Length: 94
Image (tube, rainbow, N blue to C red; front, side):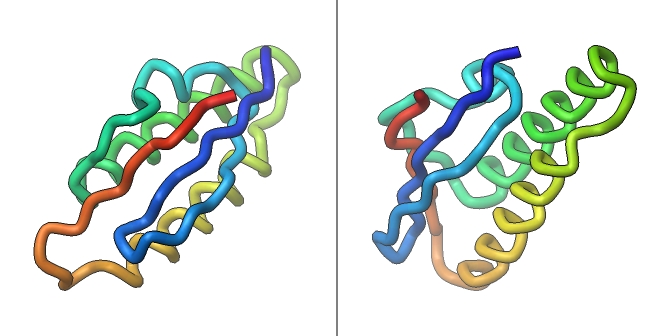
């Protein structure tokens, strides 16, 4: 399972490097693509849950790092809820 990092640009212009224990992130996000906030959160939840499940199937335990990353994403998303048409951009996946 290749560990990956992906960089986001939040609606306020700030950037954040995120972690995924699996390449599943490439199935849900495309570098250069911008996502409406609700769609971004939906995709992030799916990606981190799938990644954690892949770790569990391989090693017998869920990936707490994936769930920690999802918690950070959910907290950050909350900062922008209520704004008009916020988008998150996936800048890169490495």
